[in-house]
Length: 460
Image 1: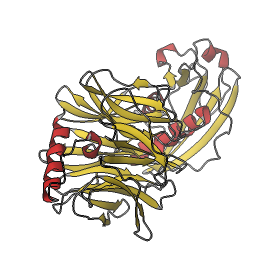
Image 2 (image 1 turned 180 degrees about the horizontal axis):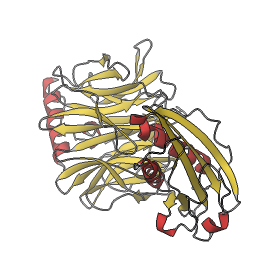
Image 3 (image 1 turned 60 degrees about the vertical axis):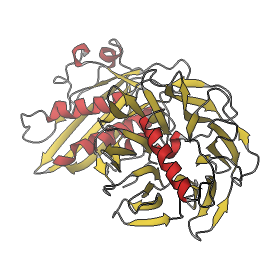
């Protein structure tokens, strides 16, 4: 059993003793492990050029040429390669695109600049490039303009052209917008570049909520209570994060609005007030409460404050999460003897057990298209990320085979999974493609970091 799980096991025992020692509880690890883009060009093409869902998919080769300085007085600095290098890194991050090295380029960009001339497509297809990006930029004071053209080198045609305006210090945001629009055009969805991941950072005996961008930039501290704060949960509109905190002594549920950090206490029953998932329409919230002496799942109507109890078992029921259509709820229960994933209707009816392999399965996360559930399961003394179909079939382990990998959370497009990792003396927040490939570490902390929660697409 991990230190984190043991810590919360002790906390649950204390709470239950205060509630007159109803009975001994088992511990479920999920209880604890509980920009502005300035471009305003024409909409991206509706056609999808790269079928990344094909079983035979291989990363598509793309070439990005150094951007040309289009200003009247071209400066001698590294902004030209800065644009192309940053854009290449963003595109490579997707796991669906392979960048071709500059050393392989046959066409001389200086002879056929962005501002004029024809593209010699055979010079690009012969080195294996299927898509080509050329761009330019100009400066006026602290203002920065940038643009690019995306070509299908095989067909010999331009498929996208966009322009962006910002400030010099916002170059990264401009490039991220380019990567978003290129990915949107090639794969049909670039929303991941407009998302953040919330997670818990431990520091000594306290912990707080932080957020970070998909590329690992923009680390932001959301809470600073010098207490134990856990289980971030995004609202469907991305404007609010729910979490639990012991800052007033009891594990209470809070909402924090990210625009102005205004905070409201939403649930303060004696005992546990654990946040679950928001309903897809944002009008209800799932909770685990122990106010009646037993951990049960409730539905909270956010407008009226009315509670509805959904489970009625002499067992621990926690970690509820709605399906994308709002008709079902996945949750964790030990009613079968060990923590397992169960599914029920949104009104608590027709409960069925989903997982049967392994004796410790927790932290369910429903994929955005509703056809799979990711969770953490114990195997050979380690926790691994496992994916299972909604009917309980097609079980597969994804992600690293070493360390403890926990708390999966899907990106809004369903193509990536964030998770926490423990091992080798540090805690990490990582992301991977949904098939377990392309693993990237976003954040690392020697004291530990847990419970990642992927935001919806965030709008300016």
